[in-house]
Image 1 (cartoon, rainbow, N blue to C red):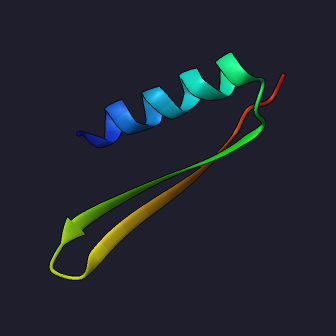
Image 2 (cartoon, rainbow, N blue to C red; image 1 turned 180 degrees about the horizontal axis):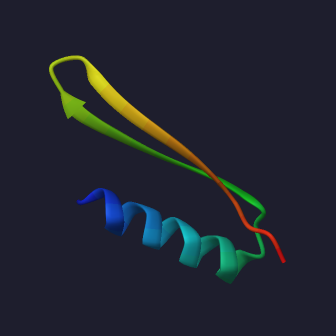
Length: 42
C-alpha cells in the first residue's frame, strides 16, 4: 500500500466517523519508518 493511499484512507475514515485525530505509519525497511499525525479541522 502506498503512502498516498494510506493517508487518503485515513482522511476518508476521519470524515466518515467524525474523528478528529488519526495516525498513519509506514515501515520502509532496513530499520526505517515514517509516521504522520493528521488532524481534521472543521
